[in-house]
Image (cartoon, rainbow, N blue to C red; front, side):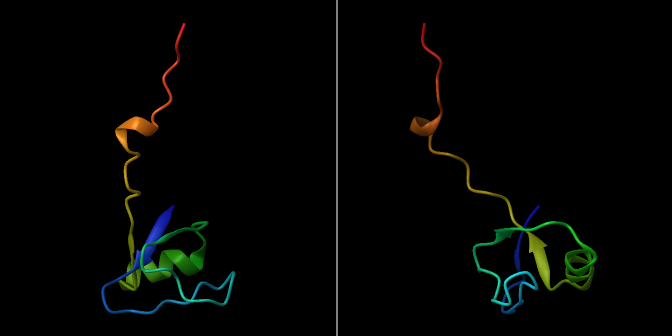
Length: 60
């Protein structure tokens, strides 16, 4: 699941010991991240859609 810090918060990723990127990161939904979501420390992040030209099209 992809999460990012709630507005104005700094959240430490326990796997890396570093602050979670403001753009968000993919994390395994452990008890730690479930608690952060429940407490409002992080929010789910929606990945940016791929540009239209980046879609692979199968040609015949």
